[in-house]
View 1 (cartoon, helix red, strand yellow):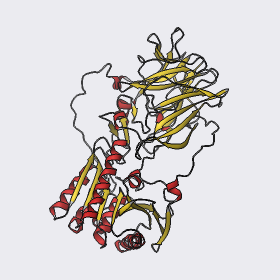
View 2: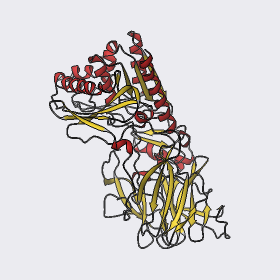
View 3: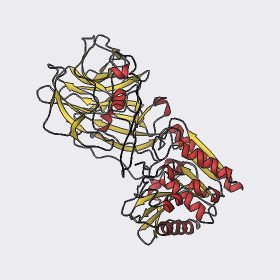
View 4: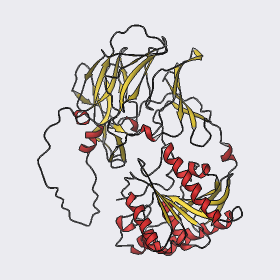
Length: 562
């Protein structure tokens, strides 16, 4: 069923998959909200060494592949043979030994990928991946002798390791297990195209039909072969320079597969968490996961392990994060609104001048609101408030029940924020965009609307949406009421529509925003459409979030002069 992403989206909420990481307080290194960096720590399992990484809070669009591949809800980088990296690449990596904590060594490697590092269990070595010409390659650093070797000729892959582990693992003292792109990714052994064949589907209802790409398509983009890297002997290197090792040997150990973690056992074997039809699942992407043992002395022979599903690498003892509450969070004011079924929370954000933007986020009844606030709300310079609105939406919900909850909560919020601003606009992301436009059409006193990544024609998602589980044919009035295209003639105040040009969510493709834009203008309204290149359902890059901030600032600024 086509679904909307949670309305709390629109915030850069990338999750760190390295269980030994701890994030510390952000350091503002720029004049605006998009120049911040974070100090992140990647710690060896025995805590005898760690890496201090200075990472931009937001990734740059320049680090993203210009032509990503979409598979269901995954966005894939065809050169990395794995998902697009959600985190920014670190600006600096400083390696520190516990016995010399005040004498860190800055790693002389550029464009290090933000994947977990592979710490050697006995020797003072650590390995990771870096990027050159969009392709990944391994590097190995000896933080005892402060030397590093690059293996740019050994093209590496990440496959699905971002789902649960590191893309590298140590096999003995001098061998490094890694993933290399499969033939379908590299183009090696390309054969004649398959013969022409019609696509035929047949089904008998009542059932809901979905069309999703198969695992073969995922394997062709993110499939990787397990391999082992054997470094060559090399002369002593200058600690300030990275030395190439073109003579290193890479031996492929197995066929292409979809891998999410590599670990080793006590006998020098390689444990692979990989997709297999006999595994445990499905997960959120419809994949089934198993664990197999592959020994370098017996390449190509995968032995299933008793456990059906792989776990992420064991968590190292965590150091306490030195995170401190942001001053802005401490100054927020939260109030409660009663909807008759659950209490909505209204959070007034500190600072800002001029018109106020009331940002609506939908919650299920009983769901705790997110403490995060979209960057563009705090960076645009206008007043802002967040309405976390829990909705009681039973299976037989009537339009009257839903209408009352939404309008009563927004009306109450307008009364409260009216104490702080004479002019109020409403906005939201995904289903929050739908609620904002619904409020704009139903309630007077709202000056404008801002909608991000919304679905505006529910007849295109006829088998359910968000909290609604009935079909279009069983609840047509609900579908029509929450289709902004159907009430575009009542959107008689300015509406700013912002959408990722590569939004692959089936419910919120860019056409949704384009058609609503056309509909508002066709019925005499005022609309502005902003399409963000290389952005999906949520906006992650510094460039995109900066553009959204500028659009918000200018849109609300017009309300002051109108």
